[in-house]
Image (cartoon, rainbow, N blue to C red; front, side, top):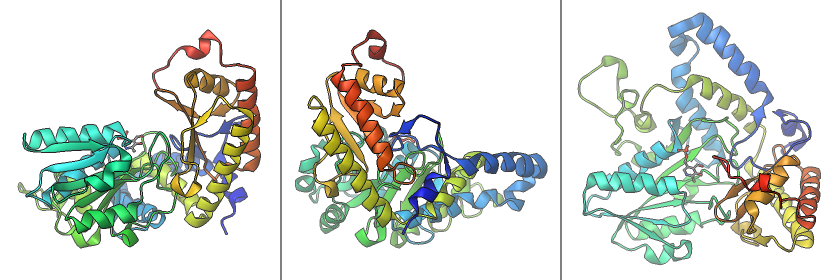
Amino acid sequence: MTDFAATKAMFSLPEGILYLDGNSLGPLPKSATSRVQEMLTDEWGQMLITGWNKAGWMGLPTGLGDRIGRLIGAEQGSVVTGDTLSIKVYQAVAAALELNPTRKVVLSDNGNFPSDLYMADGLLRSLGEEYELRVVDPEDVAAAITEEIAVLMLTEVDYRSGRMHDMKALTELAHANGVVTVWDLAHSAGAIPVDLAGCNADFAVGCTYKYLNGGPGAPAFIYVAPRLAETVRPALSGWLGHEAPFAFDLDYRPGNGIERMRVGTPPVIQMTALSAAMDIWDMAEMTDVRAKSIELTELFISRVEATCPELKLASPRTPELRGSQVSFRFEEGYAAMQALIARGVIGDFRAPDIMRFGFTPLYIDEGDVIKATEILTDVMQNKLWDTPEYKVRQRVT
Ligand SMILES: Cc1ncc(COP(=O)(O)O)c(C=O)c1O
């Protein structure tokens, strides 16, 4: 059993703050401060460029990939970290399209994160007019999977509502129609158990700054199924994905397996922070995390619905159908969220009217949920949101 009191003690959580936004940016693992400090002074400071070998910096992308892989059901050696998620989406979709060269349509849904759609659109434009990005409603995805589709690109857990796609069923249906799949796990990794190998997924991508707690700007990850890893051609053929980067050949030859999905120099400072965060994940089992997350979200929903009738649940009511977040609709949701943040309950807002709350058992417990709902009730029942200062939109919502 995961000891959640022990994991909670490993985070630096500011006094008086109830942090329900770990689905956007996880909090600081206490050990990250000293680990990054040591990396700066002992490794960069003392070793200078020899740190790439002596301190193992060059192995961080795959080493961290394997540690993340455990949480998402990936085979050893099938995940690598680096770049940002948008870049990894591009890489995955480009590689997936090349596996299906006679087909020209990428299928996605309008619950997908816009950056995924933008990246696919940009890629398809550069490939030619005959390519198409087809975007349907989430509930129509299954029916839209036909033999015309080259690639199915979906985010498993909807960033706004928390609604989950059935990865196994859709992957099976895709394969039955000759479609290659790309799954975005931004709201899945560290939130729900994922079984990439068991689902026979082809490609998956995700970020590490949300549930994995790697810090702002932490690197993304990409998974390529081992059965494809020696075949796929990287569209972003950077030198560190080359078979022999330090041969400095003028011609590109893809590296072994997942190594070919590396692009350029890894962000070592950021990866050091991520590795401190992964130490905490090493103490956790995803089945325990999921069970606790369902308890917390159920508690939150029942308490909010009992005292705040203006808030309308925007997440699936059935816990098995939602990720580790709960969203409520409220016309003045932006102002209400600002009022909550001013009172120490941090969630976030997604246009046009979604108040979003993330539940992260590694550092949030029942007591926190109860306190947060008491403050939310006060904000709603006493209309504490109804002041001009809470209605001024900031750059990041
Ligand atoms: C589902 C999803 N995909 C892609 C992105 C974009 O990620 P990045 O900014 O790291 O490129 C996000 C960011 O939150 C996301 O939630």
